[in-house]
Image (cartoon, rainbow, N blue to C red):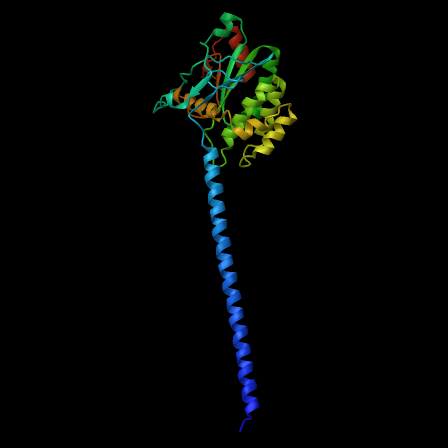
Length: 287
């Protein structure tokens, strides 16, 4: 028969075990409650970040025209630098742009384009107008194959080039828009040579999924422009949207679209050859 002391010790030991389990359960409940609370806070924080990010990416329908842009959204580079303050308006409104044609025409009916034959009749530099998207693979190919020729033609005074940079290919990171926004800021601060160099380096990143604002700022800095504030504010994003809307309204359905002396460039002919023909008043039509 067990001793009374043994029974007392057994009960005391059992109570100790029960107390330990109770304390352990209490700690686990506290940890679980704490973990749930942290998870709720994390979800709320993420939700707020997403909300503010989406709100910050919302671009106004109306906005200012950059000094480096004409009223069509084009950056015009000449041998003397980028043309400045040439727009007839100070502000643009995306909602005023009409819808584009259901079937794009063979030749865009674009505003600000000279009549064919203008170069020979006026003895002015040949007008080259290029609709491009910094995330467009074929635009990158055009830059690689013809960028140097375009730069030489502009620097010699034989031509001017107008870049209408659109956001046809914008993705979740808005890379096309951010890059175009940057180009307006760069063209306002640097000469023609550095503007060409910036564009060339930007296209070297095509196909990488887009680069972040800091990388774009660093590229601009390499070529003499401080665009940090322009990237933070996205000040020229409305102009990018407007340029894109106008391009579509004018019948531009893809990038790159290149017009030389008022006609779509027949890319089976060399760009320099086509510019020379335009200067002489020769037919530069496709075919």
